[in-house]
Image (cartoon, rainbow over all chains, first blue to last red; front, top):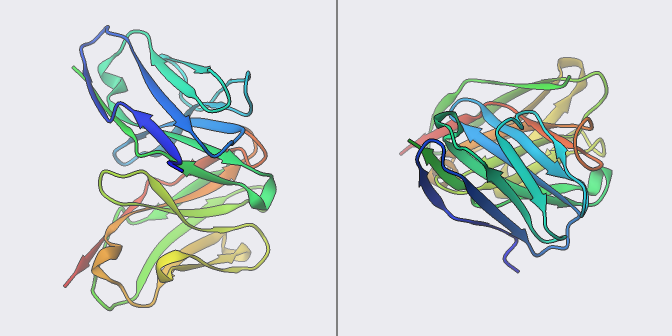
Length: 114
Length: 117
């Protein structure tokens, strides 16, 4: 049981390049999330998926797209990377309702855009 | 909209001393509250959560937090710090505006805890 996995762990891009961050979970969770973490800013939600086949914008969606490929996988795409997208990206998943719900986080992807 | 304020971006304590990390939230309704810990170059790990069952919540690694509605606070404490507690700690509140049942987590900016020998 690997929990939430993310690939790659580290990536360097040039401005304007595109890439996809991959996330997979093996806990059979319905909900999945993408966050970005910037120094002194905490984590901010980019996109989320409440169930397979649905995605919705979070607090900072501009410049990103997502795909909920199936129940296990939730990818984040940068179509034209910008230096402002330099950040650490975390994927999370959750299941349950109310008091039973807990989000589980992956190890993160460090992205540097030059 | 809900928000979370963590007082002090850096806290330093001596090994064996009390750890107190402060968190205040703003919410129009009683929220769910969380403390997460992040060790260097790792993801976030849940320490504990408040879901209205009890105001004093015990978590992993000897940490606990008390929900005080009158003060809108959810401070994290540990009686005796250990070197292995050095990490960044995030307070978070659930926001049902986004996501599933609990919705999105609104995070504070984090507090880095240093433990001196």
